Image: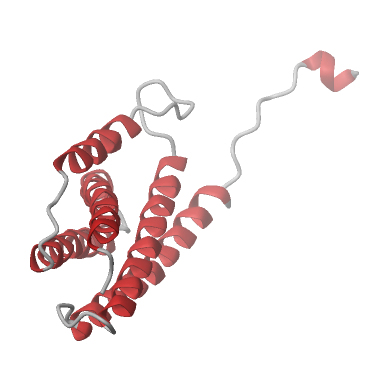
Length: 175
């Protein structure tokens, strides 16, 4: 069986990450819900929130208390992360979507590793539902594929379009 203190720290760290992912996914739906990415983002946001609730249920079943300071810290960190400089004063940069998709992709990869780790622990601890953990692991893998597809589409749309070049001055052209 896993060491209770270490398991508690590990699960709470992932809960903090799940909190950030849930907040970020919901904000992305708000920002991009009416774009070509909207349907997939809505599905992802729903699943990410469900995964967070699944983690909370697992923690309750294992009698691991959720550390509120980590949850609130993660929530606040996600909000503060919105204030990062992006080269624009009042509006979002086109790169914001790419960065946010990359953040969600990193979170999905971490989540897949969480479920794999718990599957390993389940070999020695009958409190774990192996079938449910396997479903969650597979869903995280699907989420990574979806996020890879969204990222590729966004990168192609953003980076394949040449930016307008500033016009050279007449002195530089004759020079």
